[in-house]
Image (tube, rainbow, N blue to C red; front, side, top):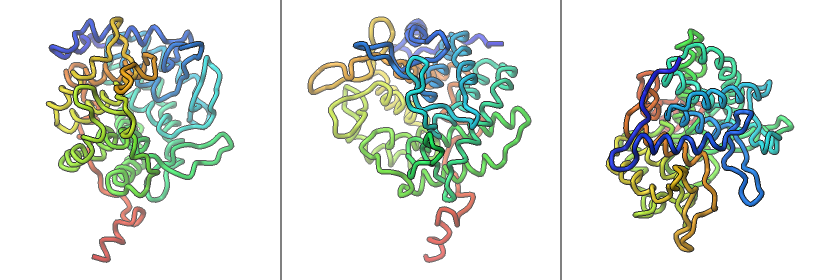
Length: 369
């Protein structure tokens, strides 16, 4: 079952036909298996597939009405899930090239399935995907520390890495909230997942020392807002503190603060974060700005190197097109899934208190004041 909803549009920026063209540029790269690589072969080098960006692309296909292609993507994902609930970090042309299982890749299936349920109302689909979601979340939480952060990868030999990533954990927070909502919807309540989400959200919002330093990357700047742990006045402060470091007027958001290129995907994720935090004016302005990376066929160049004045790295990527579509949907509030970055099952995303203040150390700090 698929509900009939027109593709989103952003007046003066993108029409519904524009959005469909962008979705078709994603579908054109979909492999026969259903997998969606980052890009088509460029200079003889094939694009790779990872579960997170694959899911984001499937969500975008669904928003634009390409339901058959979206379902093929989810069916492939379910079929290649490993017994431990994870997916390999990377495939190329169907062959696993990086076997380690990343926690945020695994968890994101919950966002995709919840989004598809919202978009289509298809209960049978949600029930078919539920075992995959349950296994993926169990894998992810197997990497959670007592303090609350989640280690970013379990290596091929079964050993976890020694650090957590702020961007990844911010994404996992949203994933856990979606997983909890899906479990409740299907009558498979998972209270432990909700406690884990609260602890993780608190650590993201209040304990920067828990994460490896990736502060050069814009994702570590805006993802705590995008994923939901940081909202309100804290989100506004976070945006203002580093706006000039990452946003280039008239061009978009940098990928890395000290490099002269802007990227459409990071720009559109920042649009989603701004919109979710209530800063619609800057969100719309940035979304309009980044259209300079639109190709005539509806796809999007990944980035622009503004010192050399050339597209960088020289490809048009599916994950970039997907981010554009999801940002357009959020700005238009067009589909049932358009509020996914604002609320889950009617509950606003936002900061959480630590479920175990002793685990993160907050209780000990408070006791010394």
